[in-house]
Length: 430
Image 1: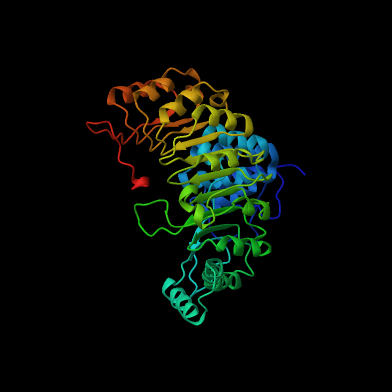
Image 2: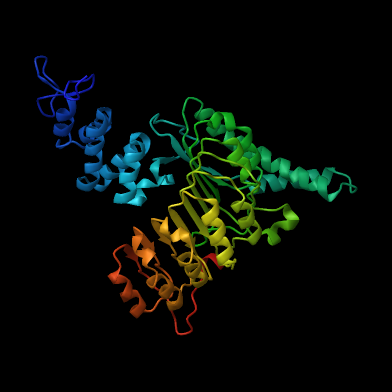
């Protein structure tokens, strides 16, 4: 069939009104072009989708839309290209704006789940779940158990009882969402958990979420200024990777302080596993431990493109870590070294590695980078091949910041924070 012949859902010439019975069908690629000029966003959005039915010519139209459309339309075009644009479409995204290229949590429209209302919009495929449980009720039940139990009960038995009460309460709350979403194809979840038993429950319900592609696994935030909690366990995250093979985005926000939690059974960890589909991994912690990083490096993630690590107050071996990342994750195009307290060491390690030649975005934000670390970046010609360098919220002098204005790549330098002692306030470590 010629690309100019009308197809099943092609537009009818006649503007925004309903097509007249005798109206002429404006089909083919010319019809798509005309609809892309329509005043209605919904008409233009449908035209973008239809354009990809016309092979090369349609793909070129969607790529052109990236340059000419509004931000909302660019995001829509980007989603289409990621889903149906093949390698040429993805490459166009990467060259135009890598932030549109990467698969991220915000690619899914998320609705907060209200257990009183349930799911009312069948088009929403991503939900935020607040799995808060009543500690007062659990503590009361546990106290009653203690009164009725014999004094010979071991600490392990008492601990198991409290955990069973937690699991029962969490399961009851989670079951409300399970029941409400039985007819939905859930692709994204933001899980704000209040008990470490939720990991076992989430694995248990894996068949219910077989379409899951994006997951935020997050400690509940009791305080608005603390992005990570000191009071929650997360467990072996490889259990999620093993049981959710379609996952493309995995964002973890939790504590990783193994020593602090050793008596409680551990916290953030990984066991060796292969996952073919994971593209984006974010680990947001207040203290990223050496053991956790050693375990993470052993993961087999052949298609990982986006890796973001929040270090907090941990100071890891920069040279060793960057070398391992470069060797292990060969498709990586985004690297975030954030909230890092030895940013200068990492800047030196990255410019000395072949990794810098593969990256499109390098993010050093919210760290302690000094002028010394900035000089490493300024003296590396490969940095100019980046699309974006983010060194915002560090402790750079204004003279050094000015030097980055000569870079061809996009550089974020705002909110440098330096006092008379050169020390930075660390909100993550408060």
